[in-house]
Every structure is written in C-alpha cells, then in structure tokens.
Amino acid sequence: MNRAVFLDRDGTVTEEVGYLTNVDMLRMIPGAGAAIRKLNQAGFKVVLVTNQSGVARGYFPESLVHEAHERLTGMLKSEGARLDGIYYCPHHPTAGKSQYTTACDCRKPATGLLDRAARELNIDLTGSYMVGDKWSDVELARQAGAKAVLVQTGFAHDDPGNVRPPHVDDPDFTALDLNEAAEWILRQGA
Image (cartoon, rainbow, N blue to C red; front, side):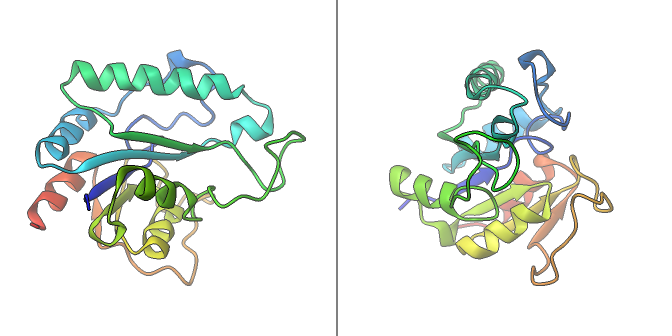
C-alpha cells in the first residue's frame, strides 16, 4: 500500500481568493510547487482533495473546476512537481438549486474523497497525511485515520467561517505553509 499526502487546494496549494470564478484568479502559493516536488521525490503519492461548492451554488460551472485543475497541473509541472490524483466535491447540502444541491459523502469533512482515492490509488490512509488550512481538513484527517497538518496560509485561525468544532483534536502539526508542512512530514520517517 502507498502512503499519501492529501492536500486541500485553496489556501494550501493555491492562494485563497474566495470563489474562483475565473482560472486567471488561480495563483500558486510561493513554495508550494517545491514542497510538492519534495514529497514526490520522497515517494509519497500527492493527492489534491477540495470542496468546490461554487458549482452547487451556481457561481461557476463544473467545467471551470476542470480548467483550474489543468492549469494547476501545468504550473506544478513547470516546477518539476506532480499530483497523483485530483478529487473534488461539487456539492452542497442546502445551497443552490441544482443536481449538485444534495447531501453527499464527498464534502469534507466526510471521508468520501479520501476513501475513493485510497481505493483507486491503493493508499493506506493510516500511514497518510491530510494538509489543509481549515478545521474541516483536520476533522477529515481524524475521521480517515490519517495524520493532520494545519497550514496558516489560507483561512486565519480566527476567521468566523473556520471555527474549530469542539469534538476535533489538535492537528498533529501546525505549519506556516505547505513547505514547512512537507519538511515536517519528511522528518517523520517511514
């Protein structure tokens, strides 16, 4: 079984811009490409997992999510880095009025995206890491049995939309950015 580092997109790999309604808004956080390259070189599967409820809300079409991920893949390639998988959730349980307005098992902190990646990429979740900028990413890691790393490049710890649920334990590590997170993961050894 493979070990993986699961990465949230917005605020972790790319700059947090609210709802990304145009691919020209997509900018990688400085150092993110180098961090992913280090993880690639160390033998980790690197998998992007992201909620994209703007689709359900009607802010942008699902095709824009694909365009953004193609652009991100190209940006990473130019830095010698790659993603082994990209998984996203276009749903929201209550927002919008479309086929995407539904309860699902893939909206983080539910484990559907990680479960699917584990099946398709032969990943051992208990030997893996989840890196993100929100408490929902920490909660996802806990529910999936992975280690949790919280980065401070996206939603601030005091953002009213990023409230720590009382049932969620501290992350295993809090990092300034993805580069510091990758360095910590690499120091954990096999």
